[in-house]
Image (cartoon, rainbow over all chains, first blue to last red; front, side, top):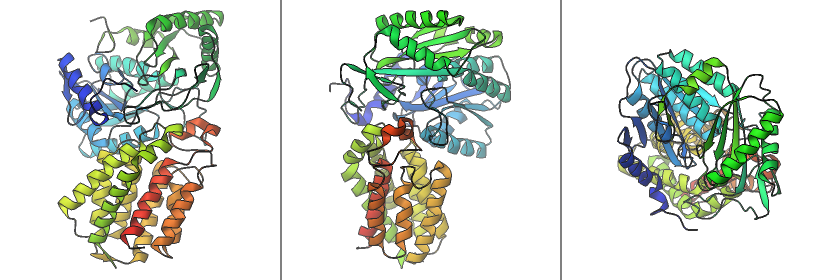
Length: 330
Length: 199
């Protein structure tokens, strides 16, 4: 497997050095692995800190900047960051108004952020947490670690970031983030497995004629495998899976997200099918975002995330944002 | 009686064993997880071996608390907090005496294993590291060698189970038929303990 890297051990550090060079509006601490917006802490404003394994770019470092995250902590590839990183990030961005941790529901992320919250509070930093768990492919039951957090993370980070920018309190920002999470549902499909630098070969074997339905974002297999389907059939399956769990009466935000190796030509075509299914089901679409936002290294495939919104959430979604991975209005 | 040096040698032996077995752990993690268990644990235990040699903590409890803290700050993922808590809680339960009996250590390790179960919410049979650790603690009263055998047996016995915790739980029935990488690395930790005791 050919990869554009030096050695697996320095993949994350090398990417951070490159990110620093490309984005002077960010402070990138390569050694301690913390990405902070350069003007932090912003006086009087609640700060947002997120993080998770690397390999999902632009999530999360690419979403640091005015209108979205205050800081991000990238872990090793597909491995959650450690509490030291999160505490360092919280200390760097806390203006005294408190810090909201945006955590995807994976055991590692949850445990490390919990430990970090305890340590940060010992340092006098007020911390609140929102757990993102939008993936309908996993049934939330006693028999799993709960639903995964995937594409809905982008909606949570953008909308809560806008609320923080308006000067809302920590509890208000947390509550909006929770509302966005509760209104978001995702479903992902893979057309090919991804290759982690550490392993150097695909994480699972997916023959050319088959696809995985219900995948997460770590190269793990999904909930079932079927013969390859057309873009329209996949859209029917994915959107139906989401709508089984979310019955929107209000308009929705749509994220058609690429997993990393699927070109925009295919993603836009897939979006056309997603919109067709939504129209046929009478679901009104307020805004649509198409692109690679919550990726899984070089996995081929896509996910669909819907977020049911009201006027307030739409206004916050439309608010200006200026980050490496998402930018409008400023 | 077991002194601080015994526990330092245990940590070093674990680092060597995890280093040797890193690729196998990653291989086991590939079909049901995300193929990084070996590399993550190796990074953590290498750091542990360095820090216990450099700081030379002088009680068994201090060795384990230091090792656990180091794992939490270097491993990441779920393995960092879980293994870190195992060693930290065991170390705290040992207190600050200079030497401990195998019986005292067994009791302390049980405290550590209970803390891991509380933190991760996993019970025996969930296809996690607990499936190696619980039988190991139960057998430790007999001998270190018995604990090693029980841990290895426990790891092997995870193969037919369906995962209920951690990332493999998202696969549901598809997790059946694969040995759990966390139970496997936990068996390495216990095997290194027996090796250190010369059993």
